[in-house]
Amino acid sequence: MMLWNLFDPLWLAFAVPGLLLGIWAQIKLHHAYGKYSRVAVESGMTGAEAARRILNDADLNNVPVEEVGGHLSDHYDPTKRALFLSSENFHGRTVAAVGVAAHESGHALQHQAAYGLFNARMALVPMTQFASMAYMGIFFAGFIFRSAFPTFIWIAVGLFAVMTLFQLVTLPVEYDASRRAKVQLFRLGLVREDERAGVSKVLDAAALTYVAALVSSVLQLLYLLTLARDSRR
Ligand SMILES: [Zn+2]
Image (spheres, rainbow, N blue to C red):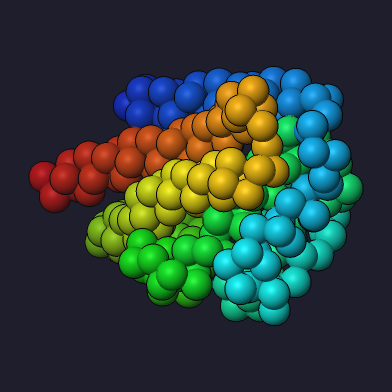
């Protein structure tokens, strides 16, 4: 039994839709971010300043806003309780920069509010890291010893299910962070009414990449389940 066969038409049938959706999401994000990172924000604020305002307003003065290398590498680190913005969003005085900075601040607000799904996602991180590492090992072991140990496929299914669960929990956390971001940006007057649509377009496009990742994961899991079911025959 071939567990992972790139030339298996069934594998292609399960992989291609997720792959296409992923590419489409990346193109959409590239366009939206590209467009709104050239639109200056009326307030003249940088992403870092906007994040600082949102955090301070929520009494999160102790959460630092730091600059980090890379493109769209922006993230909130719950273990460090710190916000990291890529250089272009840290210094950028654009609708895209302020939108992304507010989204990452949204994660800090979720952490502060002990938002259930945010906590669940955090709790899943170590297990997911283990699962993705172990999955790689099983991938090779399953390939080499596929005839001797057909149960490898069930271990692969279990590990992949953990990774898929992580993606499933991530999705609403991302949408909620964007929702919180938009509320705060508007409430604190950091973006004007006519800048709202631009912020939404950038954040919706970013969220779509998480939708694509989840769809890919679910399809891959279904493929593994199909293989596992066939291996029992
Ligand atoms: Zn996020």
